[in-house]
Length: 181
Image 1 (cartoon, helix red, strand yellow):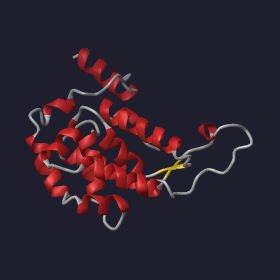
Image 2 (cartoon, rainbow, N blue to C red):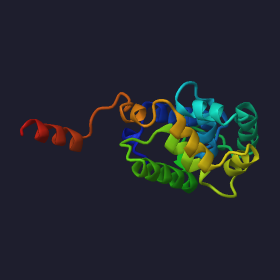
Image 3 (tube, rainbow, N blue to C red):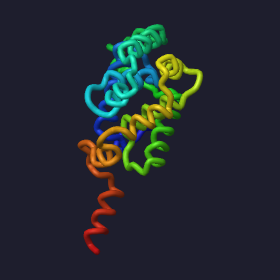
C-alpha cells in the first residue's frame, strides 16, 4: 500500500494523473509507465525543469510511452458499470519504484517523496520500457541527479512542499510533546 501522506503535493498530483491515464486506457493495473507519463505531462514542478535542463525530447518520450501503454491488457467488460469502479492494482514493479523513491528521499535527507525522487527511481530501472525510453533519450540516473542538484530551490523547496495534508497521529503527538517542553 502506498502512503500518499509521505508525498509532496506535486507527487500526489502525478499519482492522480497516473490513475487518470490508467482509466483512459481502461487498464486495471497501474504500472511504472503510467506514473512516468504522468511525470512527463506535469506542468510546473521539478520534473519539467529537469527535463528542460537535460534537453530531453519530452514530447517524443510521451509518444513512446503512449505506444507502450496502448497494447497493455485492458479491463474486460464490467457488468456493474464503467471500469472506473473496477478494482485497480499496483504492479510489483511500481511498488518497487515507489520503495526506491522512498530510499532516494531518505538518502537525500528529505521528509517527503517528491517527483524528483520518483523520476530518479524510474531511471534506476533496467530492461524495461521506461528504461529504454530514457536510454534512447540519453538520460541516465546520474544525469537526472546532477540536474536535480542544479535546481535553484534544491533541496529546501520540496521539504516545505508537503501539500495539503492532515498530520498523522505520530506527527501530532510529536508536536504536542515539543510544545509541552
